[in-house]
Length: 163
Image (cartoon, rainbow, N blue to C red; front, side, top):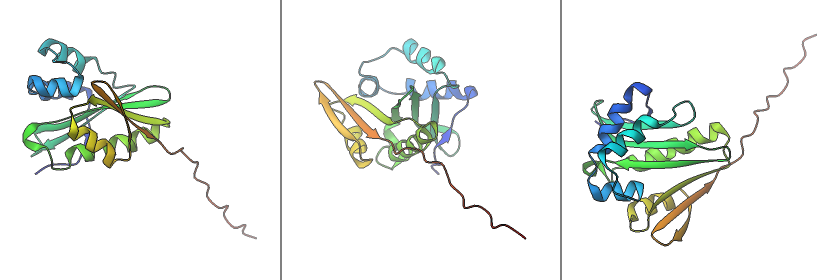
């Protein structure tokens, strides 16, 4: 059974690192724009600031991390970095992670979300389009942008006066 995305805690960094380490060199290139070493991937996973950023995961049978998204926060925008294990692609996991990241970023009040991928990564390009992102091709990379709706204060009608 594939579970819905959930926020990962600091105690799950090693689980995230193992997920990244399982990526073959081509998938590492598609995710990071370069074929990163195991040491670099471990440093990346351990260096995520979970006080500022968010890390979401999708688990199979509640045990195996099969999809993950790093939502990195900046003052006016957030960036999504996404991976799905090869055997679990085309099952809606990436879409569920992007939707979760968008909802979470909205609570931060950021004005836009963006994803970057290799131009050859048609799956990510299609995923970005499916979520209404605008694609900008810049040589070997594609940037996908989505403007976020402004947060609006909830206005509740005043309670009727009791006389």
